[in-house]
Image 1 (cartoon, rainbow, N blue to C red):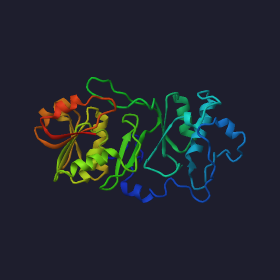
Image 2: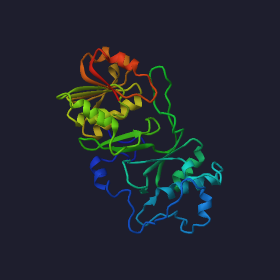
Image 3: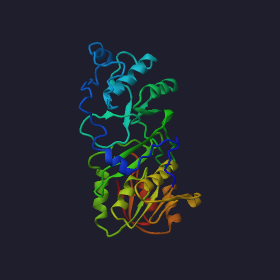
Image 4: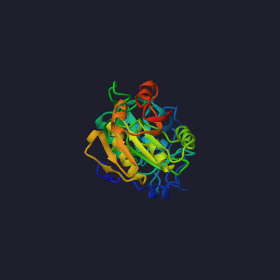
Length: 327
């Protein structure tokens, strides 16, 4: 499978390169400014008495800037365009989505092209200005963080964020008991998740898998593939991924390849998106899985969006699964 991002840039970094730099990527060098801004105080009140923010906005010679300074720079550009007023705080500016993201003990110092921002008030003009003038930003999305991107079920309409400038491909480094996995996503099409040092979902999956020897697993609401790929890392005999949302099924295929499980994209016969040695990826309504798969699974994972009734999912796959696990 071709791992090139659709923006034709090198947005998909090999895992070895990420791990090589992960310990130092977001930490300051000895010369980085120690300036910190208050997130809940209007920026203008802090800049008036602060002479250390110059035309470079605190960027160090090492090429990194504290996240607060990056957001302050973005806020100033938005204020110049009249999108934000003088009372706006850093917290009210935008949602910063770091890439690659992994749990950190402190606020990061960002290198270039390491941030995608999300705002409901932004427009194309200011999005392009931010992209051109704030080197850390690689993409600008318009949308509400409270809106879950994707599709809940066959009766729902899909939601996406609008990409106004740059590229929205970002990645999370997810820690599992079997080693880290790397989950890429076009953030305008896939729901936002923030990596944790210990994921409750992955811990639950591990406990279930320990009851079986080489289980066959159906991940029927796979999203970007996090749980199913973890299962493969944990020596599952076979994993079938499925999501009714095609962008999720496609990005799962890419994430399988990234994590060392090669796939071949198909012509979508019977909604089979990609296939591999012991893994397949489908894009189907969950109620169609039984008639298409014609096989039994030890474990079925159901990980729906918050607030979704899981009865429909459980009923649809009860005949082909020994154990249904609601994540």
